[in-house]
Amino acid sequence: MTKTKSCFYGSQSYVATDDLKLAVNAAIQLQRPLLIKGEPGTGKTMLAEEVAAALNMPLMQ
View (cartoon, rainbow, N blue to C red):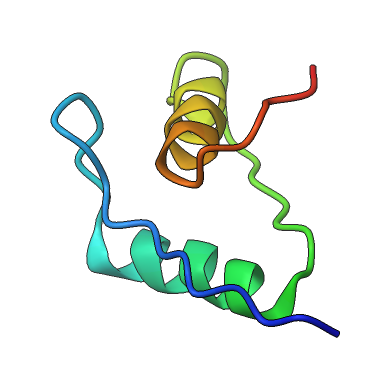
């Protein structure tokens, strides 16, 4: 298994909490999926877009 050195810190357009950054970065380091759930309009898609952009990876929808 290849380890990645990328991390997600949030962005100018998406301010992530410390807990969210911890969960996202744990999923990145473990190379495991991250299930994000919540009510409509809470920013789940925006989070996915920002993480993909931060990691310079395509977002598959």
